[in-house]
Length: 236
Image 1 (cartoon, rainbow, N blue to C red):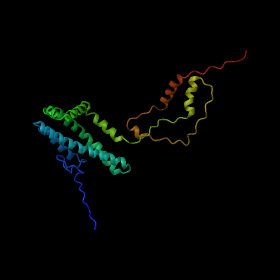
Image 2: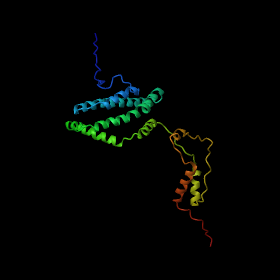
Image 3: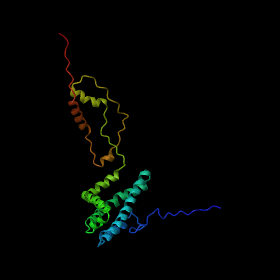
Image 4: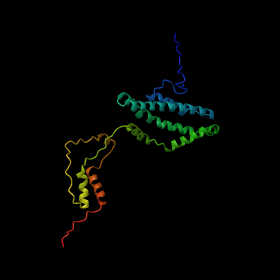
């Protein structure tokens, strides 16, 4: 006769006290009321400020965990369009709305008249305030779209290819600028050349200099080289 031991998993998922267990972070309309509740809550003592901090911490952790899980899923399942869609939904529709709210909530704590009393009780709150002060000092609303775009393209592959040159193309301006008399190699056969597409990175504003920039650069490099000595006759 075998005995089966029941293993409790109640400790694996911490019970929330502020954020509903069934909160769907992918739905902003479920997040906004929680943010409003924290922002509008009246705080009348250091104890109430501490409770407010615990609720904010729980709220922030739930949002961050969701975003981290979407990123991990996308990194582990690069060919799954559904997972990719959920990740980009968070990056483009949840995180940009949450960042300015998090900033305002951090400021609410920093500006609280009960903050000093809380810091006297526990030095960890002083360290927290120092970190949050640094956060609000550098935060700018106009940076959020830039950070969103950076996250959106993070991990993607972009082809960067401007022009195709062979040895003759490189040596030609050097020969011309230095007066070198060595014969140039024959042009390479470009029949099998298959240039990579750079359309993806061009949509981000990348604009290469092309052949004119190549020619200008080679002239500048060549100008730093010693000139080839002129041929002198050895006849007397």
